[in-house]
Length: 501
Ligand code: AHR
Image 1 (cartoon, rainbow, N blue to C red):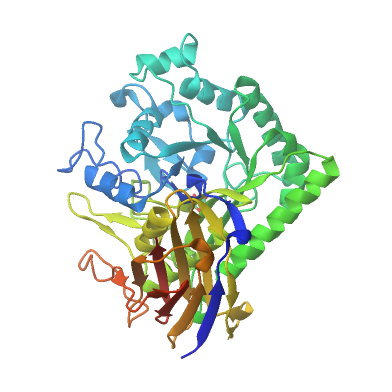
Image 2: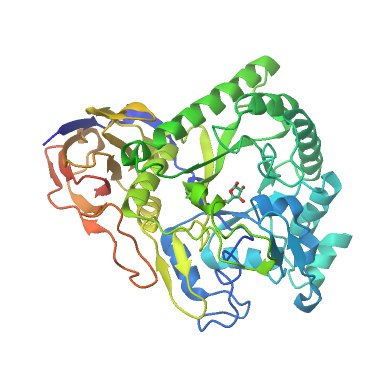
């Protein structure tokens, strides 16, 4: 059996954990909002029409910040359509997803839903069809306490306390030709800088996210970040990154190494942001908001009948069903985000319910966990204190896309106060179990508190409406901690977590 050796010590500190690294994303897209989180006729629905079975799953998932209301949707959105009496709200066309938007859920309802789930609302403003004035209006409506036209309108609509939204995205994927109102880097950089300056004149403590590239394969990747930041650096706090992965051409080996692309993406954005920092002689350091990341079978979506000329309300779109292999890749992407937490300050799994989501629902029926639910929920639950980057000594395997890729990836967390530690690992081998010896002596733990793994003899096994619990977590047999050395055997194509105390 191949072997790996890992050493974890506290000098390998990355950063204290900010819960915002476990964020997610709710877009008005397909059945994410309507027939997803919101279904007034459902037996579990509360007075706002929100499904409480879904609320329970969101809490179990452990997502923190929730980005809203898009995504591509936001670039044509009129936020004021979604506030006030529901029977007076207009139905509009959503050009991004070629659907009809009923506006039955808007800012005030969504903010209440966030409270139910214990999450923080992260808002995106429309810089596609709109601009500075509208962003300021939305901020006034959302955050101003009272005594102005728009804050009083919010109060009259039934929300007396301000929503106090801290994180704001300055548009969405403005580099993408698919985006309503997309712009050149120069034009967007200027608009983002002016919008950010105005928003911060209203509230200097806002945290603003300027749009980075929609993917590392965009032809403008790198140059976009440089130009946009040269315009906006002093006004913003984060630059966004978006990345979706999928298996292509039956090449599971390359797919399992997808996190190498995420690492390249992060490294490139960090170097570019720091280059601009030096050029401008700025004192501040920009962080990444990785506010869209996930597995998405995008090629299949684009070739599917989902893309059509009909105008429907909440059509089934982007409802990918995830396999064990998808969950292993997702677990590995989350490991990568944590390993870079010194520069990736915030992240959002895109998305949360029904649309490329860890949680699925049926109208009038059940809600269930996809395979990808498990690595996210366990990592969010066990990762506490600070992130430590392990030293990993392991063999490699050849991939068509990334060349030689390490067989194992891992990250650890340690909470000094409780003395608890956690180690997260993936085995990318498709055929062999791997024996891993982990030196944790420095952490002072003596007991394995929990050891779980996601794997299956069929790497393509999935949870479906017909079989909602086909795949779940399994106990990771044989995890032993003796004299500061933890020994585990990782099954092929697996994601595992071990909690120590
Ligand atoms: O998450 C789905 C879509 O992916 C979002 O709307 C968009 O921002 C990205 O292209």
